[in-house]
Figure (cartoon, rainbow, N blue to C red):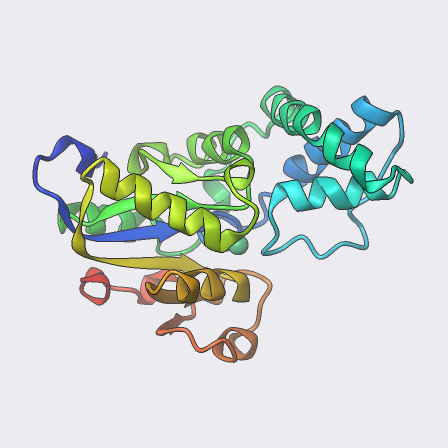
Length: 236
Ligand SMILES: [Mg+2]
């Protein structure tokens, strides 16, 4: 069990922002997808499908828009229904979530989070998951105690905006100072682009569906095969 950096009075020397799917967890998406589809069924009576949609690297709100578009609704009605679906998808996941996600934790995650805590490095989430879904996944994976804040799908239109929100929140809470080094760790080109857009270190891990070549093409500062290869010193 780590101590939260928020409990300290001094700002942390560094902040590590983590994506969830493909980065902290993998193969944890089935119930999540079912919840998104169920929310569309509740709102429209239509059965939509994610089978033809590459979900990795995307925000849940955009997936809900794509699912709603399959029902034939015009764009203004899709946007009007979105808040209702955001609520319904989260309720659906919470009522039908898997029993345990500890076996879905990616290699090296637990030891890295423990090491970051030992080094006083703060941690946060930047994820395309809706907030209730993301937090429940962290609970089910046994990782909840490592995180006190994050930015989630319903908080912004793009992953870069979510990263900016998380950084602002960390500074507002004095988790970090203006001079603390900040890194975004993710498995998709969109994570690397979000880091670039915010001028922070981009760390790519090839534990998701993106290949090493696809990640390298985005020019991350660091690329690892999995998080066993990442050391706290690389974040300082
Ligand atoms: Mg991901």
